[in-house]
Length: 188
Length: 322
Image (cartoon, rainbow over the protein chains, first blue to last red):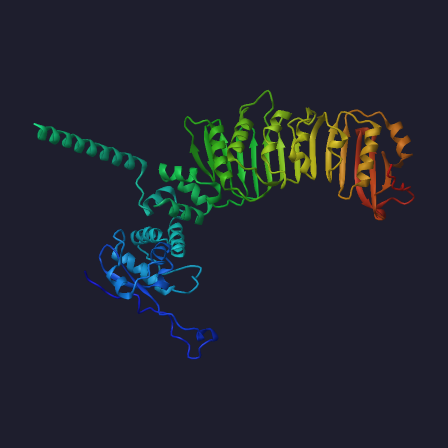
């Protein structure tokens, strides 16, 4: 498994030289967890950054892993492409402990990537990022005709849908018939 | 896309884009149609007008009017015509309206439903029934400040009125195609919509209506077959006691108790063909009730005026609780 330690470079801004009053409290060392996507590339992410994801936050909240245990047990997200997970990790790091701005202009322009990001963010339950993504997807179709929307969102026509369904049924029927014939042959 | 994502996206679109989305494919149409109204964007129209005549016209706010024409079985919107094939134009118009109403959650300033068809030549006689059915299906009351309905009898009005939110309704206008019509309104006056409205105007002769049914209104105009001098005096007493009353018109088909009313209210002040009486109102030095009667039209009009508007030399009668 290839391993990179990303996400730590975009850490929190430098501490102010004059510490505020609250800084008198003893600092708790930040804990880190590890995640990987379909490409198995492991990303090291702080618990603070991961708080954006309700799914991961729920998974790690009572785990009490040591650094070694966390490193040895990265969370696998096999349904998310590596480059998409990278985008998600970057976003979580950039917005760690900060209020989220009203809009985000750094989302992918390529619609296939944006749709994949939407699916990943929805799965990981990152509410704010999902809202940004949905806004961008909504903007794509504002004022467009049904035909244009179909093309932009890559939606098949009802006729194409029906044809695909018929084809799938036909294929399933053939496969079932093949299995029955094979089973009959075995029985002989 | 997962359902939650689609709900999010739809909530971020404007209502026109969502209506367009319904035409992309069957799945999206089903998804939008099954979505709870609260998840849909708001259309924010200020006014909806429905006119049923030789054709059907529906106007949403300042948008162009949709015209549903029976002669060429088409719908015209924004200069774009659509041939409706074998579809019934009433069904298409009603379905279009139903879709838009799902998005109209804010309070309209006006809702008009004018069925101008005469009883003998009624091409779309079931329109108000189908309209009533979609109101029922909507499962929430339509909020409007002013409601204007033109229909032909009590049961038709009753098929529409109860579907409007009585708390937001301030003004109710009930009209007919023929203003000489006589319509029973004993059921209508029992509705919340009637009881909660501040102003009510009817252009037909209202039958089975009592003075009590109109005594709490701020503004009103009614036609009645007749009224007794005693009832007129009762109305005067209620009005002089009211802090919210502004004006009203009562038009009678027959009235022959002029002598009795002069005995009760005293001799009138004559101004041209009109007789006038002036009464002080309860708890007010400034407000005066002016009652004018035009004998030629059997019309009694009541206006709250200020003392400075009372003609010079006129007697203003004191407020009398009894």
